Image (tube, rainbow, N blue to C red; front, side, top):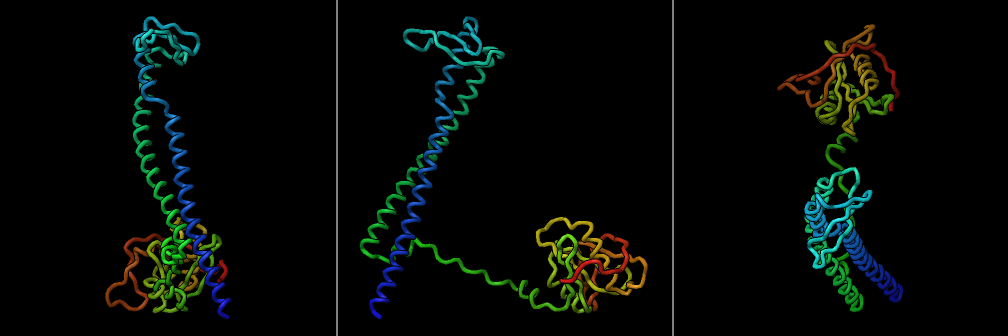
Length: 294
């Protein structure tokens, strides 16, 4: 029994050690990759002093330079032996325009180089620290310092507790449930007190809220989980339900008011199911159930 427990403890330690080393090595790889990318960026920018020199030489040789297609030959007044050098420049652009391009490249390369060099320094410091961390981990493994290794192992993520809102939704039985043709959930209150609970405890601010105009009836809520616009087909289907589950059921056509739940308020001391709308629109539909229940 004792040997089995020791073996299990050894296995756990090995897993802990492997996890700590893996994390440190991943950090080292990340910093190395960033350093390589930053060095590539510096190389792409080129040497800012060279672009500035080319710009100055082009202006200094503006009247004497000779051109062969996309090559411009100028006298390098900055060199001791004053040689003729070749500078690239598009043939369809004047020497002044080419010089301006080199000055722009100079400014971009100069500013970019400063930023990149600062990031390189910061990343190199981080890389050195990651290497040092790996050495300490290896030392902790050799000394079987489990407490030190645990500090490198992320704690298991806690499962979020269900919110009061979700608990209330799961326990609420006072609504008929339907699914629109576009896949939106539609809730229809059963009684007056259910209507209040549905509207003010279950519905969220951007859910669509509907009720038959001028007739007692159910509150209807279209859940808008993704906060997108409710399709017109879903609006019509929900409005048909609001008309059907109201005293307007026998009418050939019925008006239904609709708005976002955030515009629905409960007057103080109002009877169950009675609300006030700060803003709404109205749609005329046939009272019927044209969607499937869920």
